Image (tube, protein in one colour):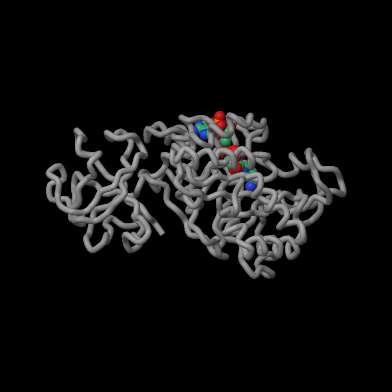
Length: 417
Ligand code: NAP
């Protein structure tokens, strides 16, 4: 359900009178970006002319009219809003209002998941690993920037930092409740069998200081025959996944309320077929490497046909990391589009991913870059620009063989992704 939209107040049609809104001020407004205020019912205020509702006391000193308002539905206040992205007007509590796509982060509804997911998430893997203080500060900064979806994994060693940052964000009042956050973590390949999955999620939950995660994913489509702490993995240790066994464990996590949704990562279409043939609870999503230079069209179409949402990881080509390169951000096509639109190349790459109908997780520990990366809503790429990007030569950033060694199982997975 889309829960926010932007009303253009310079050309208002009819706006409801006397309703309760929550307003998030746009960039450049007289209030701090992201700061919230209540609009209560009870009459018109001269600054808004005939526009219904009036701003609360703290807003009366405002000097200049706002060009637009971000309006978020509070549950129970309104009937669900229709998707603002696909309509020019919105039936809003009995009145038609002009609406454009909100610059707030949209949310996606997932199958068999008890909560919606913000379409952009902050990644937490870094190679080389950042120190815990930098990691925690970055997460707090990301929350201030508006990120509510965080992606971690047992394998990244970032669960503890994320858990401490969440606890700190709650203490500081940056989020009022745990339910405002969407937290994903992932099952490590050494625990990929039925009896080991619940203990593994419990370990992750302890690291995160949480009672549940919003999404629990099988991280890799193979298993390690023992606890592995370095790569590449020796021969005989990396084994094919017993999908039925591990998925039963994942389903148990959901049944026990330890995960609100369950899914997979790096699964090929063949593996998804196997999984769907035995699953009582189908996977909500498949997290995959995807960016303008690795567009994954066939696998995405397959997932769509099966009702499995795709989340893109490494949408910037993992630039600046041990495994990544500069192919995405160094693309002349993306750079030229960025220049013509007054955006950064990273924003063009991320917006392209989002316009493919998928969600994404991208990582930054830098305040300016994380603010830039979340600023991809409320504007769009044209058909011509999308078409130009769709013709870029393809190059996958990460191959499992290069990380884990050229085992048969791994080569098979690489070939299917
Ligand atoms: P990414 O998001 O494509 O790129 C991250 C890199 O880009 C960082 O080095 C970051 O540096 C830099 N960066 C971020 N914003 C930038 C901008 N606006 N301009 C220039 N550089 C920018 O790659 P990723 O970290 O590989 O992927 C994102 C997340 O996906 C991970 O953190 C992880 O949570 C998840 N992931 C999952 C899997 C899986 O197997 N499921 C695999 C890989 C990743 P700074 O921090 O210095 O800004």
